[in-house]
Length: 372
Image (cartoon, rainbow, N blue to C red; front, side, top):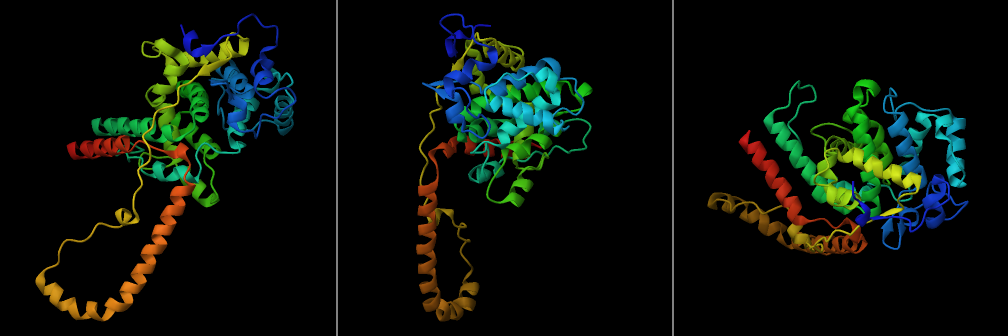
């Protein structure tokens, strides 16, 4: 597999231990890695490297934990988990073979849970709620053609709308993480963790806002649910399609011809742990600028013209309410315009989405339903 053109290779052999490879360069020794921003951990002069706990835990689970029943569901001893976490925060060697696969699995989830900025915050919920629903039944024995087409539409929406709303370092981190989760789901006969079960245990680590009750509802999983849980399930089930752009950065020219892309990504993780590779160069996506929408355009479309009889019947009532209603209406317009202006000024540029992709995804969804 030739990936060197998009990956940074050390200029000369290094004698450092694999556990210290990237951390010495990015955050330095004796510096916490849990609860630290991804920009500080992953980004260095245009290159993106995996945080040490992520790459070591991913590799350990891939090689030693795929058959572990209830992977990512079972809790390890608290003392072993605390010791491993403190070891990473102190930049010390951590022997995951002694800690156990459940420690490695929980450390992965804990890393995401303690990020200062979550993967999906309340600002992301609006575009997630627009995820097209699937007619697939949760108890259906076989998938219909319509359900399969809708799954493709949903995956396209995640690929072209939801993922581009995230920062580059978040997308790259998710790509490596879901490469592992995709492989875990393939081994569900042994570990009993299919895409649905993985989405249930992983979604709460990705979603966080100022409203805990809303976060809980956004973690639901189901074919008709437009939630973070459904997004996670789609990422596991259709990893190759959803992360197509990120895979090109990681695998280079082999991305299109590679048969098992998830396994290839995990090989890159092994090369990072061994010191053969240090990072990945990623070109940020070119997103169109957000189009300002006036408050008037957000209102409910006007009703069709009423019949003459209805106009005459309500003419006297409207004339009585005209003076008072116009004054209130002007105040509401001013208030709504101010709220809209404040929201636009507070909206981060990282949440810009492609309006063309949104429209195409919704159009595809309507076409599939119409054909059914």
